[in-house]
Amino acid sequence: MLRRLQPSEFQSLLVIASFALTLLVFAFFFVRALRLKKEQIHHLKNLPLQDEPSPPPSHD
Image (cartoon, rainbow, N blue to C red; front, side):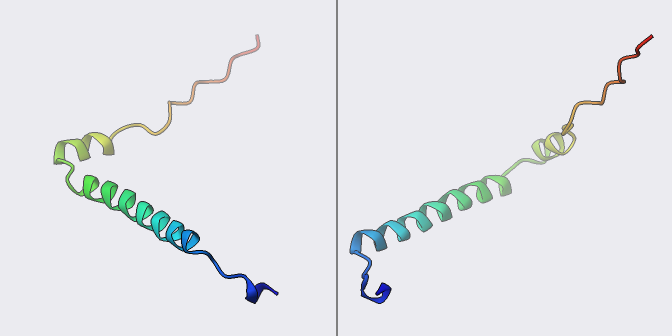
């Protein structure tokens, strides 16, 4: 029964458009990352990912 279902032309175009959009977004950020200046790379490399853990409160 599922063999009788034929995807419409619109569905095929939608799949191609979604793949193309994903590829464009990935390519944009890839090129942007490649064009970063050395100073920006060094700055971003040294950013802390988490705050320093604070000591637990004392219960005196």
